[in-house]
Image (tube, rainbow, N blue to C red):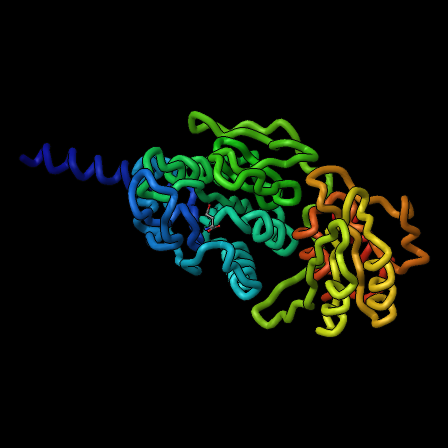
Length: 347
Ligand code: DGL
C-alpha cells in the first residue's frame, strides 16, 4: 500500500512538473461561427457567438498536452458586429498580458467576416514579439465536419511555436498561416475561406507541426499606441462603380469625417463626379486615400491621377478595409499628408 501511495505521489509530481513546463496560452474569445450553434447539423443557418470559450477548449482535450490554456470571453458577437471598442479592449488586454508576462502567446477566436480587420488593427498596436494568432470557422460547432476544433487546435500550435515569435499578428485557418497585413476573406462559404492574394500564406500548420515559408517584409513594430481612452478618428470607405454619384462623398463631407478611403476601380481610379467631390473633401481638410476594389496589386502615386495636384494619398497594396485602419491610426499621430503617406509605405 505504501509503495502504491509513493508511486502515485511521484506520478502526480511528474504530471505537475510537465504541466509547469508547458507554455501558457490565453484565448480571448469574441464569438463568431466557431462559437455558433446551428439550427441543424446540415443547414447553413446558425447563431454566432453562443458557445462560451471554456466549452470550445473542452471540445479539444488534445490541447492539454500542448499548453496550459485559459479562456477569457471578451465578447459574444458575430464579427459583422465587431466594433472599435472591442478592438481597443483586445489591444489593451494583449498589451497587459505582454507587459505582465501572463502568457507565452495569445489566441483569439473570432468570426471570419471581419477577422482580417481585427488582425490588422492588432498587428499595428501590439508588440510584434507577442505571438497573437486569430482563428475561427466557417461551419458552426454543431455542423457536420465542423472546422472550428481543428482550426483552434492549429492556432494554438502556431501560437506556441518558437518560430512564430516576432512575426506580428497571424491568422491560422484551414491549415494555412497568414500575415495580418496580407490576409483577406476570399470565400463566403468555403472552409478555405482566407487567402493573401499578393503574397500567399506565410506557412502551414499540419499534423501538429508548423512550417513557415516566408516572412513579412514590412516593419512589424509601429509608433501607434492604444489605450482604453484612445479616441480613434472617423474614417469611412466609399465604393467606386460605374455611374457612382458625388453624393456618396459629399454625404461624408457633411458628416465631417476625418478621413475617406475610396475603394477605387483599377489603380484607385474614379469618375469625374468623385473627382470633384474629392476636391471638396480635401478643401474641407479631410484626408482622402485612394485604394482599390481589386483584390490584388497596389495603388501607386501619380499614375492616372496626380496625387500631389489632387491632394490625395495612396493605400499602396492595402485593401480599402485595411487602408481605413492604417489611416485611422495614422491620424492619431498627425494630419501631415507626407507623414501619413510614409506610414503606408513603412508598416
Ligand atoms: N457570422 C459571421 C462572423 O461571425 C460569419 C461566420 C463566421 O465565419 O464566423 O464573422
